[in-house]
Amino acid sequence: MREPTERGAQPSFPLIRRLDRAWFRAEQLLCGVMFLAMGLLVFASVIRDVFGTDRGWGDVAGLFAFVWLALETRVVRDGEHRRSRAANAAIAAALTAAIAGVIEIYLRNLPGGFVWAGEAALGLMLWVAFLGASMATYEKAHLSLEFGEKIWPRGVLHVVKAIAHAITSACCLALLALSIHSIREHYAAWKSAGGHGSTLQTLDWVPLWAVYLVFPYVFAAMAVRLLAQTYTIATRTDEAPKEQVPT
Image (cartoon, rainbow, N blue to C red; front, top):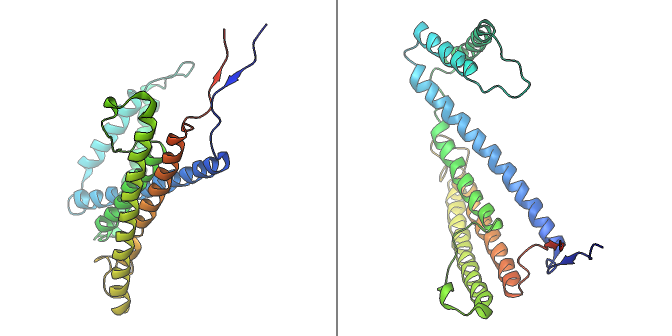
């Protein structure tokens, strides 16, 4: 007869944990959208630099060869029929014509490219990097402060870890205060200039204080998550419940 399932410690504040997970998913989505936008901007800038002044039929032939080889060497899944070389060549020709046409339209209509692409990509990279730090804190994959954990008795190790997380959370709170102070100064400079100062150079309608909003957000999110981890580690409820079914 099968014995009843034994459960470990129940997670504390399950509603808050669900909300934090939903917030984490929103961060993932925002980070993914920004990363895609950053990649497209950098790609458009590279296309402009490479083909802006020198392009010819040799470039088209090279693109066709690349696409055709990619189709020829693609891994065929089980049950999937491998296309013939003629079919791959036809698909490669169509894709080459489409890509070359888009590039030609882009270069004809925007001969100077997106002059603001580099600065916009840097701003997006800043947001992606710090959102990644916030998500790493959620996943407990962040850099953490260690107080020589191997030298402490096992019975008090959870207390030592909790103290380390509390100190890290306090550091995040200090950085939060500094980032708010910095944003206030940038906002004051932008406002005193009538919205024409303290902005991005190539995107003068984007103020620096708006770009730097990622700092207080991330430091606040990290401080809250680390403080919550401090509590769960101290009370030994930091692990999700595990089901153990004896065999």
